[in-house]
Image (cartoon, rainbow, N blue to C red; front, top):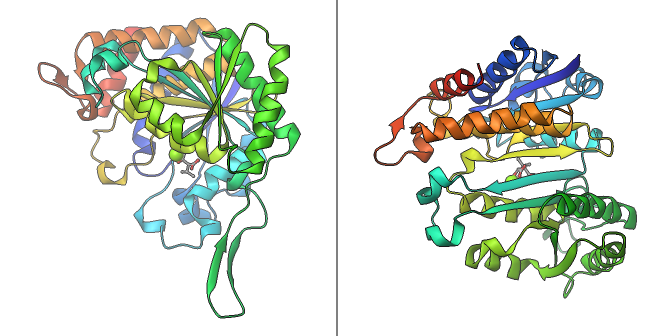
Length: 357
Ligand code: IPM
Ligand code: MG
């Protein structure tokens, strides 16, 4: 029996998580998996209940389980809080405390949704790329950081971009291994022409290459990478990059596929334990209306089965079910196009469940 901790979070989080839990339940019923589900609070919901976005109780459960399924965190009503207790800190705290350093963000274009992309169909048809983002280091966590007042009375904000060799090596190895399992091409993204920290990043990525003779390594500056992503995205197979560059490039890559509502992610530690979440946010503007797209979260369940629960067959069955539902023409509003059938969040979840049952 595997233990899964479910953290719905804020905004549309609870709505999309409910559909993912339905999927886990049907797979349990069919004995395809053997999973027990526990629930916890994180983000603004946790702040409201306990005064902290990552309560001790949640952290204890998170350490104890085999995998975590998270909805999304954040919302307007918490934006004025001190940065130390904002909902985002719940997410960052989980990543740091559990050492979930390897963030896998696939950008896969479903052929059924080709015209949802803002790029020309021929540029994105067949798009299948994977961004491997470093998740527990870099400027997100570097010290010192803060806002200080100088002698002349002016204030100054500062953060630190720092990576140790071992941090670069471990994310590099995940990326090379990911490229080995895919198309054998890895592009490391840095700003080595300006930032010493990423000069070291480039040097270490290059030094790892000899251990992976079947992977073709290339390097690209981040500004060029952003441009290439929208110019010719299919040139990429796997991209590996720092925490902040990965944050930015993965949103860009997501939109190539037409809807950020379709993309899952995995955040893994060294042993394969992971936290799984859709890459979109809490979308407060549509929360409570039952119209959010639950597919990214359901696809996150598939990633969880693949990477943490060692059940590739179940992962594939979920992905197939989603393909079948899209083939049937069902669309939530974010991916709706003419001739298709618009459905609510729960109808989409039920349709996937029906395919699995
Ligand atoms: C993401 C999000 C988070 C990040 C925020 C919510 C802290 O944008 O997962 O990409 O910046 O990492
Ligand atoms: Mg982001």
